[in-house]
Length: 114
Length: 112
Image (cartoon, rainbow over all chains, first blue to last red):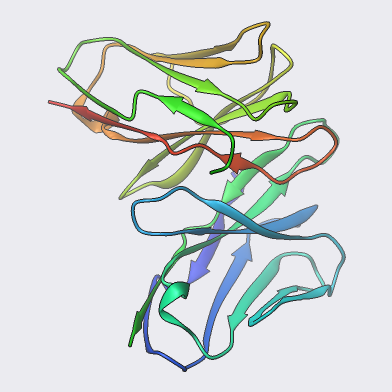
């Protein structure tokens, strides 16, 4: 079945350092979404990328969708303690159908030391 | 606050028992999704309902079932519970014609 892997599993940074997490799918995705889950919380939608090669920015966060629509990345510039949490990519599997089935990646836990 | 509500927040039960988890989607959202999150399996899609009808199924066990009612709230029924069913169960909903999902606070199930 379709699998979505993320690396690294865990990253510990000093506040102010940059952070990047990478997401790779075993199959081509119709689009990719990113979610953030704070410790003890629930996943919160951050963004959706649809087009091949698409790049979107949200303040210090930059999201990229690969040309082949099989990989994606999230880069955070100058991390802050509020960035702590697990970042998940999620591939949308709805080719040929009306479902919005999300295949979540394995997640990257970001720890930020003040 | 995402607008999705789930009850109960915590549930502790014994092996072999049956429980029901409840979810109310955001106002106006027709789609409801159920996910299981455990330490070793990550966030796993279980099932999706759209306006009362089952739309997609993931790796949902036969011991688990769900339904969506006319008022759009949904229930996830877990029966013959095993220790390995201990996990966080999230419900999510999405707006019509959009893909992003809004998650509820989750129900933490502990099977002893």
